[in-house]
Image (cartoon, rainbow, N blue to C red; front, side, top):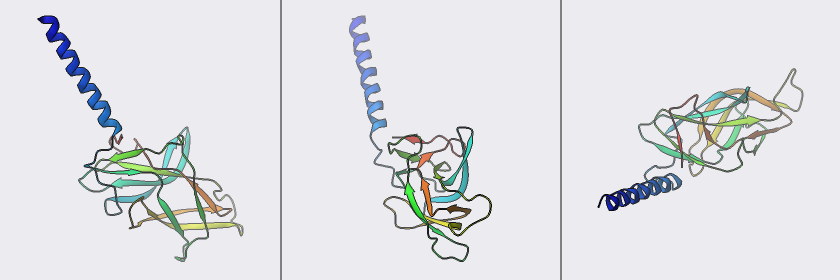
Length: 174
């Protein structure tokens, strides 16, 4: 009798473990996509690998969890308000796989900028940027971010979105 109860209890725990693992692998359908109405963007520098990596952080300003994945679409503007002649290219950060992240209220995600930063005097190939408009995947509204940066060579590479513990309460990958 005791052995039968132990076996039954073991099977229940094993099933519960499988259910929990399966739930982590599947996106929760109750979390809507994050939109421009739910996130606020701001310039932030990520302290990764002993270096400071510039980019933009996006904080969930609502009381509900939402989710993000992939790369935002970007447009940059000069101080005069004109569209900057810059080409944004997607480049993975650390991992080439794309993950979806649940962003709880108050927590943040981040994407990094790379390549051809200005140094010294600007020459004709250098462009200063004062604003970036970003649009999240599957959203139409832009998030406007005031930023002071630029590029020489006309290209800025940027990473996929990923969580940042320094800015967030725990964000969960699913």
